[in-house]
Image (cartoon, rainbow, N blue to C red):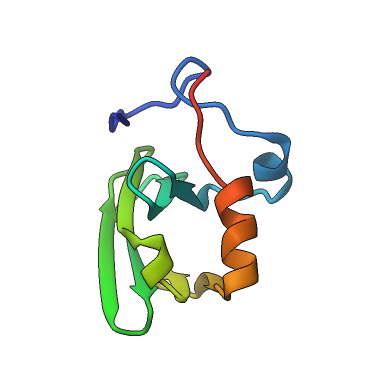
Length: 115
């Protein structure tokens, strides 16, 4: 199971080359154990970040992220999710629609592992 810790180290979390190449400090991933879509978010800010995740236009998940902390949050059962948008107080950071074909690709290509 994932633990919420203050500091990322190589022993706790490994990011692949695609994560690095996006220059992103957040990502969505599929958890096959409970079939959920989850968000990983790492704060790079020196101030509290207020992140809003909108799921299917009817569910709002608010993340109040402490400076230099990281969080993992379950967004719901993946097969029930068709749309996700991640906003901060300034702009939309990420927006994704899931159709059946892309959902299957995402399940196979987007996950977090510990090494």
